[in-house]
Image (tube, rainbow, N blue to C red; front, top):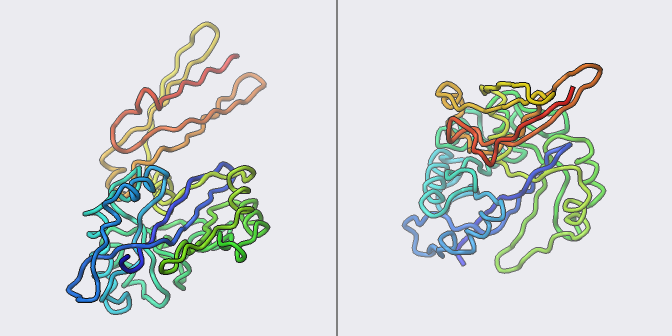
Length: 297
């Protein structure tokens, strides 16, 4: 097995957003180095299984290139390595998230971002930040250069169900971590924590890249809707539009399904509905994705 390969994955939740960062093994690019050889793992069916399960492939580092010395070169080599071997996520081909160590300057983070990485993490000591606590909601792109860590670890004997539950109930993005493997040794996850996340947590799972892509829609989006009255019901058809202007704002964002909420206020009552719709790859929602809301007067 080659040096470390790091994998990030997860899935998402309703009252709060829950993100699991899994550090597994990652095969970096083959630089001219006698002691290193690519193992080809990213080209196997095992890598595709991770994608099908909702995981995300992100960057951690490259052999023979130090983050502190040339972070732009590390980001470029890692981006090319992943892109040439596997898609990063089920919603987007290109990787958009990466580990970054503490001590890098904002100029260095900008250099990393220029290579296609919008999310940098985690806890790297920048003054700008995103989701270091439940109220630390990102407002600008550079806030995502310092993603926080909340909820502790998924590792057995280290993680705490109570700590995870507290973070979930506080709301916001919960960013767990787990060193899934050390050399050839697999690190077990905590069963109580995973059972809580699967069965009890009022949350949905996501990944770094997915969470950022959801966030970009709030910066720029356009919708179209129409209504018609049929048999004492108002039928509202809602459609997300992909425009050149909005795409230009966040060209790296993946084509993630979005949840929209419609508030319809009638005589003495108020009802809401929500539905998901792909928003970026085409100008119209698919028939499978479009939902109609009927409100009876």
